Amino acid sequence: MTNNDELDQRLAKADPALKRVAPELREGILASAIAADSKLTIRASFELLSQNLRRASLGLAVGGSAAAVAVAMVLTSAPTPLLQLSGMQGARNTESAPAQSDVGASKMMMPYMNFEYLAGPDLSNETGSGQVFKLVRQSTPEEVLANVAAIFDVEGTIKKYPDFAETNPGYFFGQSDDPWGYDGKNPVISLWWSGTASWNYSNPIAYPESTCEETDADGNCATWTEFKPTPELLPSKEEAIAKALEVFNATGLNVTEAEIRIDLSEWGVNASASMYVDGQPTNVEWYLGWSSTGILSYAGGHSVAAEAMGTFDTISALSAVDRLADWRWSGSPSGTYYQRFQPVMYGEPAPYVKEGEASADSEASDSSIAIDPMPGEQIEPETVTLTVVESESALLSIWDANGEVWLVPGYILINDQGWFGAVIALIEGVIELPKETEVDFMPLPADETGVSNK
Amino acid sequence: MSPEQFTTLYRGFLPQISSYLVRRCEKSDVEELASRVFEIAWRKRAQAPKNFELAWLYRIAGFVVANHRRALKSEQSFVARFRPLDFAPSPEDIAIADLSLSYAWGKLNPFEREAISLTAFEGLSNQDAAKVLEISPNAFTLRLAKARAKLKANLQ
View: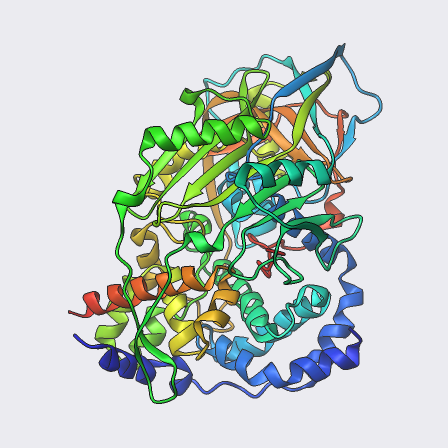
């Protein structure tokens, strides 16, 4: 093989739709879709929150700022819940999907799989206490966007996204006339003024220009210039760290050189750092990336500070094992845990490729061996037993029902399969859990549309 | 957008969505999955980018397919639950017509497969395909070029 024509011909002949004729869809399917909406109020609410979560990117891909400890009180009991959890714990963005699984999200995500959690002999039965922090947004949307714009030398005006609402307060800053701020030419900064007030900088011109080598009879490009990596254009590790320090510190994350993680490949460079609160890493992260052209192509961070809300009693690691089976007790730990346990799940971490792109060929080949059940085939649930062999204390982020983010004491419960679950360690009563019936459907592991306001 | 406007706008996309789904799923599942696609589209209709509604529908359909596959796979492997979304046609689908292409196809990652599928099968322009994947046209072009080069290399 082969030239492009031959490849295109083979692909055309291999089009699965040629062998499996697409059924004609009735127009009534649209009317049914509209009618179904009224029956899905709870589910739709969940999805909106799920999407908002993803926009906020409070998973492995985001960052935070310095903690401001304001109050510290000791409570041994909590007759009135401190916060009311949203009904979406365990249904965060795709990046944190691994955590959901083992932390008991199985009940939501895996109707065909039952998990049984056992406590190993080395788990402690000692109770304790831990600080709870609320992440409070800092400054105003206008000031945050102006600050970030100055750092990245972006000009323009502040606009609201077309779907802006009190529950969906999205802004962007730039010169684009596109209602969503994206025109493929001008850099844009987006800001979601909820949760941790996450912002994101994106520079479309940072990517290499594609040129057409050959056009077809219809005038469409048939062959595009093949891109080659240009590592000589990329910043060095030292240069990337220096720039990350400059940007992170200027946007509210006070970190040292040692706390910045660098991923290098011939296609790009990524720098990231976690917000530390009370000496512990959180999943609130800052990041910065260069495309293969060596131009800064994306960045992200938050405008938030941690406010101490008091010290609360915690259950033992031994007792926490029971919470693994209830997704409502799950929280999101720092991305450092995923880095640590990734080799167990995936093999060695794949080299950094590019934001949004797949990273490991080994994962890709998976689908080639997948065997789908026959239509109508009954699927028997499988029970998987996991024994928790070790625990660590960690700060976990959770979202409350009002769209605010909290950091609460939790446990990283490491099982005998080498993976972990993250559960909240607070005693019962400090937080009000959502009713199970509020989410007694099967949430999706990722937002259904994946369509954001970018 | 009123129900009438929604119906008027989206009825023209029914064949494309059906074809998209049948390339990636069992034919018997297409109607159910299409219903789901349009339910989501209706609920999120305010987010539909003007003039890119089909790309937006493909985006929705891609995630519906990926989640459908995850649900089907879930009983097979604990690890399968953590794998990245894959909504491209599978190597098995390709194998019906071309076994060696199927083998080469299987060695691509899901994002590479989808980049090629959107242009070769769905017939989208780079700009529209970029909208589906929510990346810039240049980034898509880069991804597509790399995917095609890799596919060609795999065929050799």
